[in-house]
Length: 82
Image 1 (cartoon, rainbow, N blue to C red):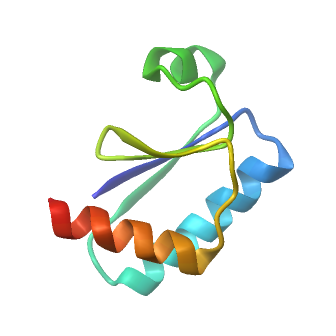
Image 2 (cartoon, rainbow, N blue to C red; image 1 turned 90 degrees about the horizontal axis):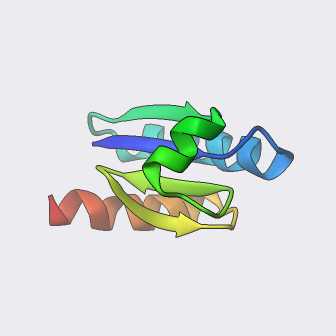
């Protein structure tokens, strides 16, 4: 599973990144987490709201910070769909 936390480095983006790392640990599956802060890359990905979360090329969270527990739920769902 490839996860991208997308945002230009604001506090909310940092919080979503930290929560995502924690959720990935709890899942105990092979996960790559990348933080995307470069504005050109963000535009290339087609993301217009920050922070956002992309899993395997699909945006699953836009413009909000989810708790670790909510992220675990969403990531489990994505893992089951794969």
